[in-house]
Length: 313
Image (spheres, rainbow, N blue to C red):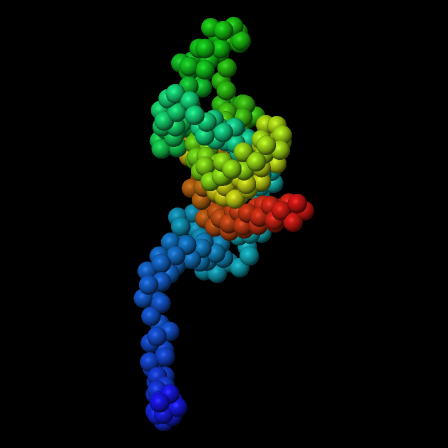
C-alpha cells in the first residue's frame, strides 16, 4: 500500500511556477511595511542633508538670493576666516569636556539611583526635572543667576566672603565657557544617569553574589564586573551626548550669544552668525557640511576606540 501511494504521488504534475509579476509583487510586499519609515527618513534626514550640501555649493547675495553655482568657493572663503580655527578648537574642548564630566558624574549618580534608600522614587523624579525642562529656559535662568548685579551666585559668594565685589561672570570668555559647560553638564546628567541606571538594572544579582563568594572587594567588583557589563549603556549614552553637545545651540546663544565677538562661539553658533549676522549664507552652508562631517568623524572615532578596547580585553 505504501509503495502504491508513493507511486501515485510521483505522478502528480509539478506546482506551476509563479509568474514574473507575481514574484515582483511578493518582493515588493515588505515595502508596504517599510515604506512609511523610508519616506520619513528621506524627508527628515536625507532631504535636509541634500539641501545643506546644495546650499554650500551656491553663491548668495546678502538678501538670500541665489546667484548660481559657486563650486568650492564657499569652503575656500570659510577656511580663510581667521576665527575658524579657534572656533574648531573651542568646540573640541566643549564636546570632550562636557561628555567626559557628564559620563563620570552619571556613573556615580546611576549607582546612587540604583541603591535602595528612603525617598528613592522622589529623588529619581527630582533628577529628571532638568532634562524635562526647556533647555532655553534653563540657560536663561542660569544667566539671571550669574548676573553681576542681581544674580544669586554673586549674592551667595558675597555673603560667604568668597569674593569682594560682584563679578560679571559671562563677560570674561574663559569664565563664561566654564559656566556654560557646567550648565550643559547639568542639562545632560538626567538622561545619561537614567541610561546608566537602566544598564545597572540589567546586571544579574547572581554575578555580584559570585564575586562576593570569590572574595572580591567593592573596587574590584566595580571595575571587574560592573563597568564591563555597563559597556553597551556607556557606549549609547556617550554617542548621544557627543551628538547633542556638539549641536548644542540654546545654552551658548542664551547665555553669551557666542560673544564677546566670537570668543565663546562653537561651530553651531558660528554657523548661525555667518548666515544671519554676516549675511554669508553660502559660508554658513559650508560650515553646516563641516559640522556634519565632524560629528560623523567623532562618532566613528569613538566607536573604533570602544571596539579596540574590547578587542584588547
